[in-house]
Length: 377
Image (tube, rainbow, N blue to C red; front, side, top):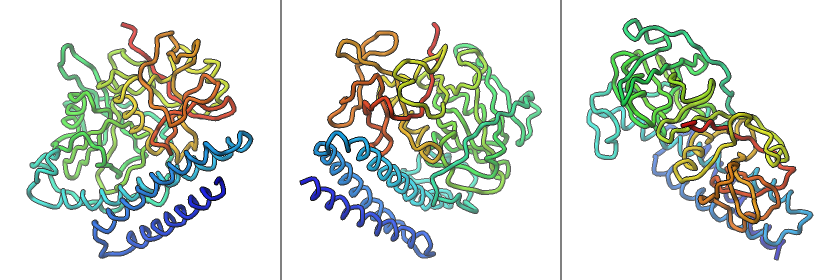
C-alpha cells in the first residue's frame, strides 16, 4: 500500500512539472491570455490539494524510523510548489493591475482604487522565477519637518487621534524603483510624500507604503516587506517603513496597530532552544491566538522560505496534558495539521507548505521564530 501511494504521488508530481513547464511557456509568449494562466493556476492548486492529502496518508503508513525523512522531503517539495503558485498568481495580478490602471474609469471590481489617481504602467517586472530575496537589515533616519519634505527624504509627522501619535517613515533605498500592489490596503493619488505618509498613519492597518514622485501614486500596505518579494519595477518609486515613536514598541520592532502587535523576525534556531524557553529575552515568542493573527503572520512571512527553508516556531507548551501560553493561561485557538499534535516537545511549528497549519515536531527540528512585545498596560 505504501509503495502504491508513493507511485500515485510521483504521478501527480510529474503532472505538476508539466503544468509548471507550461507556465514558463506562457510567460515567454507575447499573446498570452490571462484566462489561460488562471486555468493553469486552478489545475496546479488542485494538484497541490491532492498532494497534501497523499502526504498525510503516507505519513500515517510510514515507519517511525523513516518518519522524519518523509516529513522533510514532502515539506521541501510542497514549499517549492507553494512558491511556484505564488509566482503564477503574481503573474496573473500583473495582468489585472495593468488593466485596472490603464483605464480611465474604475469598475466595481476595483473599488478599492482611488478613481482620481494617476495612471501608471509597470516598466519591468522583478524576476518571478526565484523565491529568494535579500533580507533588509539597514535603517535610515534622516528626519525633517513635514513642511520641508522632498520625495526622496524620510518623513516625520503627527496625526491627531484620541491623542497625538508621533510617527516616522524611513526610506529603504535598496528598494528604490520597486513596488507591490498585491494585498495593498489602498491606492491613492497624493501630491506629496508626506500626504501619503499621513494616509498611512491614519489607517491602523498600514505599516508601510510606496510613493512614486513622478506619478503621485501612493500604495498602502500592512507588510514591512522583510520577507515579501516585490513584483514590479518602475522609475520614481520609493518604499517607506513607518515606525511609531510614542513608546508602545521596543526599538527595531514593527508595529501593526490593527492588532496592537509589536514584533520582530529572528533567524533559525534549534527546536530544543525553543523547548527550553531560551529565546525572546525580555519579550516573548509570538503568540497566535486568533484567525486575525494567524492570517497576518502568514502575510508577512509569505516569501520567508526564500531566505530560510524552515517553519516558524510560535508560543505554546504542554502543561499536564493541556496546551498553555508561557504565562500559564490556557490556549483556546489552534490550527493543527491532521493527526497533530503528535510529538512530546514544547514546540509548535507553523508549516508554510501546509498552508501554515501547526505541527508539534521533535526537538531536533530547526525553525525561525518571531518575538513580540506585549502591551505593559
